[in-house]
Amino acid sequence: MTVEIGITNQHRRTVASELEKVLADETILYTKTKNAHWNLESKDFNEKHILFEQQLNQLDEMIDAVAERIRTLGFYAPATLFTYLELTHLTEKSRENNDSEGFIKVLLADHESVIIILREHIKVFANNLDDAGTSDFICGIMQTHEKMAWILRSHLIK
Image (cartoon, rainbow, N blue to C red):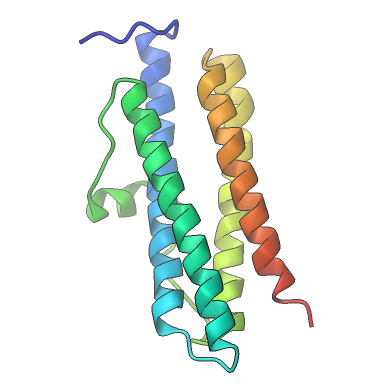
């Protein structure tokens, strides 16, 4: 069925392709956060275990929302680990140590990297690709990552 939402097919395809990369980044970040949640060894285990679980829930919601946005634009969302690893800009390197500080530093760097990429997409989607809806959507995703990064960063202050 044809998608007629006021955006050219080529622009929709370009936006969907970029969203596929965002979906891959979100999924890899989710996996790295799950690793931290499962493998944490630290005196502050309970507090950080809960923190990582809260962030996992947020990432899970964003993963679903990004996949649904791709579908809204008329394309299929990638759904294999192999594809995510090809599309992501993140590395699978997941930690310095299994302590909370090591995990938090790695996850914080990934969130900040994702924020930079999302920020770049906001104007391009709205101004160059005539997709204000996805631009607004990405802005919300970026704001969630900014808050998640702030929370992680606040745990590093001595």
